Amino acid sequence: MNLLLLPLSALTILGLLGLLLWWHMAERRAASQHHRTGHTREMQLLARWLPLVVAAFLVLQLAGWSLVPFSLSDSARSGLTLVGFIVFVLAGLLALWSRETLGSNWARAADYQVIPGQKLVTEGPYRLSRHPMYFAFWLLFISVELIVGSWLILLALPLLWILIWQAQQEDALLEREFGQPWHDYRQHTSLFFPGL
View 1 (cartoon, rainbow, N blue to C red):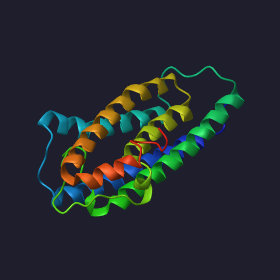
View 2 (cartoon, helix red, strand yellow; view 1 turned 30 degrees about the vertical axis):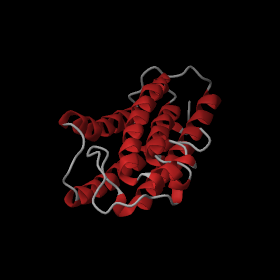
View 3 (cartoon, rainbow, N blue to C red; view 1 turned 135 degrees about the vertical axis):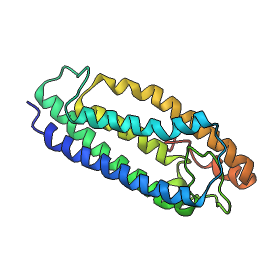
């Protein structure tokens, strides 16, 4: 029996709920400041609801609704759970650090816009990665699948494709807005993970 699963699942659920609450409050602050959008209505709905649906799915898995679990020994499953929890903590910290670094320069992905007065942020995690928040969200998904030991970790590949598509759309938008400074910045950074 995996003795780490229950306490680390409970801590991960609390962490996910806390991150969602904090994110919701940040979105509400941003929504009160920015009213434009560059996305179609359908893309706005997808960008707003997909993260919530994925988060709810992850919470359900952590609460015991696990599909297609790995067939592993107890010690291997405990090791995987511990690695998953460590990845979860690091990814959560990266998401928070990324959002806080953007400050008032953050625009919701659902709105797909450059907000009035927005500056090109190149500090903090943005020194190495143009989209560290997307990378953090992807790692959060992977971490939960590791914690529960599920073959659904394979869904990380289509999720990565969606995040890459969104990041490329934002890159094109930022290139139009910032021009040469964006080109210079892009030369020294990766889309998600430094070196890739």
